[in-house]
Length: 260
Image (tube, rainbow, N blue to C red; front, side):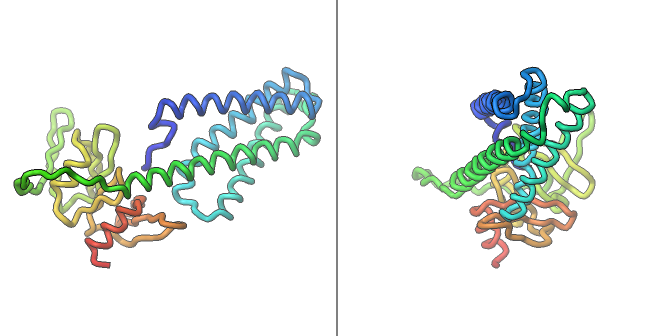
């Protein structure tokens, strides 16, 4: 699965927290000023509303990997707003503050505020994906080097698991995915974690293995089909049911290997 931008960067996490704090202050000010809410109930309402929206916004990154149609994204935004408002109202009702905070009077503010924040977040997510795609399609011009020795291709991979050592034969390997400083090997028997780089496997695996994404290498023998999601967004479906995202560069390389 693709790394979340807030996990991959400390600066983004800091900016994200700052954005949430500013959004909470604006939300509280709107409730107290225009919805005539009391400061304390408005603060509780703000914590609930912004907290729910923040959680939904975080997981939207993963959902949008599969949802590329804008109509479905818009429907998802409406559902998120409805759920957040409903949960906030239910919790405030249980706490006995439903009379202090007029939901009917504040609904337009809540809906507009939530949708604006959601749209801004989705636009930012799209920009992050586009930048990643551009980075993957840029192939640097290498400096002239002496002719390299032929690389010995792997026939099997040994994986240490505590006191046991597993032997993974290459023909059994379905795909590989980057997991921080490690690589997860997927086989019909299960998953194994190997302390190695994706670059190493990319150069030491047979040509039947294609790096379709910065974080994924797939065995073409296990590919069931390739699907297009939106503009230049591809999903590679494997025979075991796994679905992997392919970048534009990875898709082009896959087409060359499969002679499509």
